[in-house]
Image (cartoon, rainbow, N blue to C red; front, side, top):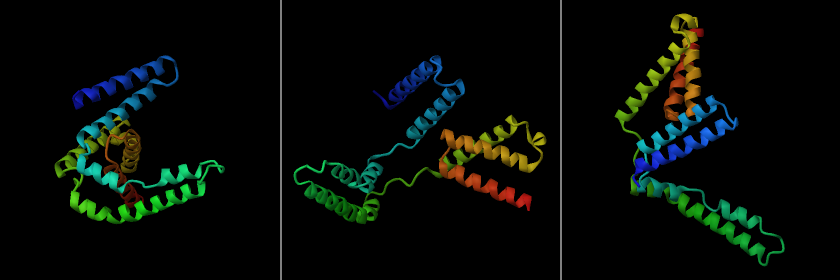
Length: 191
């Protein structure tokens, strides 16, 4: 099965599940629409920026170490033979892996050289798409003339950014920087 076929199969499954829940009255049409938009954005992100073996290796090396082992050892019944020894071993493994693997993450990253994120062209395309999304939000809110001036436009854009963050259709870094810029502009206008 190709990557595109797998994505199509997942999308069909999510759509069928959402349709059943809608028919049973468990969710509203707006909820299903929002859920499908978020699922589409998640799939788009994974297709656009899949993790390669280098990125996966860094994630595995830098991942949490020993937390589950220590938690599992702590939940052993008190009458378990050699419980104290098992808990001690779990702590030693956790601390050892934190020190060894945590202390060497820097060198692993330097050695594997994972991708540094999206390209400049992809970032520019995402910024342009966000700008278009925000302008559409202003138009849906009635246009600049009906929003009571520049502060009204900023508030409409801020609401759209918050909705976009919930849907996951843009990167969080871009949304945060755009929101910071809107906040700074509003403060400048209000002073």
